[in-house]
Image (tube, rainbow over all chains, first blue to last red; front, side):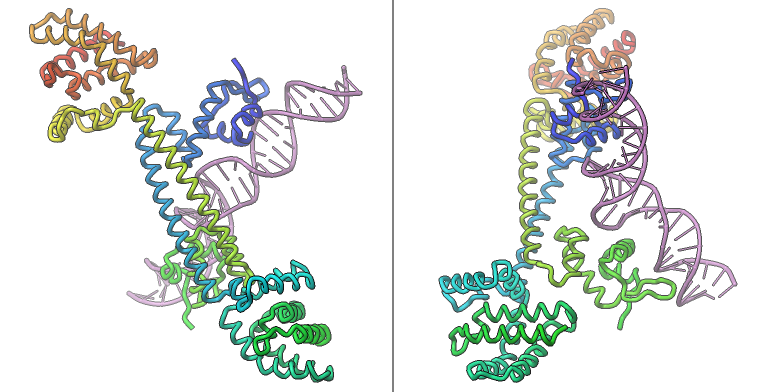
Length: 256
Length: 256
DNA sequence: TTTGACTCTTACGCAACGTCATATCTTTTC
DNA sequence: GAAAAGATATGACGTTGCGTAAGAGTCAAA
């Protein structure tokens, strides 16, 4: 007769030693023998029984149910299986419902409050999109771009539209300045206006140290996302850079 | 501002008071106010938040996940939903596998070792079936019948077939006797033969006190289940009774 | 003021082990 | 033959989301 130690058996069956201890504790699978030193020794029968146990466990029977099934030869297995089948089918339906709900939720989120990848770069061909993106990545690194995109996607469509509209005249002013070798003070004044405007979208939160980073982050976005610096429908990389520099300067000098 | 007590809120949302306590404990949903006496008071915001919580809970997010989702506005909900969706789909596949396994198992059990209800009474119309069953119930009580049927179902098809075949000639002899006012000794001798034959199907187990009960139980089955006492395809209730009496006598007098 | 009706906190229970911690073997190594 | 290395044993707490008392304080109606 072969004898297996806990570890042997656990390896054979692919379960943990603790599990065997547990099964012993609850009386599901007792070792064939206990040595003087209380070591557990299992035989072939126990190995076979363990296989059975694992079979039912895969079907998600509880250990107590498995005890009932294996310990009582009078157990009505067919009925138990039928019941289990019903339960599993119910569960499957539940999951289907959940999946539907998730689909709807995601759809809602995307349509009503989120900006999709395509929208982020809308109006550009795929080639242009990739070019823009790659240039940006070259300039700021892959991680920065992804972070920026993620941030942008979190804005709602309405927020984004309003953001763009309310800032049009600010941008107009700045754009005029940019091609006119402006005084730094003037620019910074306008930037300050922009900043106070922007804050509306951030609420009163993020007041302290996050502010600076975020505003600089927004500057990067302007530099990276051509939609913010279109003039007459054309991207203005110079202006984007101008804006970015001005905002960064503002953030560093004015914000704590 | 309306204020809700724990009970109010629990009724409104359809959760238990304990649940609200729990959510408070883990910081998922804190009451808007605590009175002097430590009573929890919730406002409209909390009601709304609770709805959200329940929404995610229906999708089987864990409470910790819900905390993450609701507490952190920067949480990437879309990604979380995607992950959750994947997990649910995986789960669904698992369940499909389990259902298949159960089907196979049931099929195996039924084909190879179990007898179904229909088979138990095969060859009889539904009306006849009910009649037979009801008569048996009248005679021996509902519980006995169910036990008997359960016992019969535990026999394999092969066992049942062999049982019937090997005993045909024993039954023939007995049947002849039954219509011939036989001597008790003769009958008991033949019954003894039957008994030793039957034991093959019970193995060497159930040797002692269970034996007697079981053999008498089998007698009842003969009396109840017309298939065992068909002659030329017709039920023989008289013979069934004769058999049952003989077996009972044998069990009582010969078996310990 | 007594009595219900509520509410509070504290804490065990459940399922199936995972994960230490501490104490004993048993086996290997020097 | 002794010490180090490996296995194994028995607690016992942690996990997840509350259910279910238990014991005690609070509030409004009678």
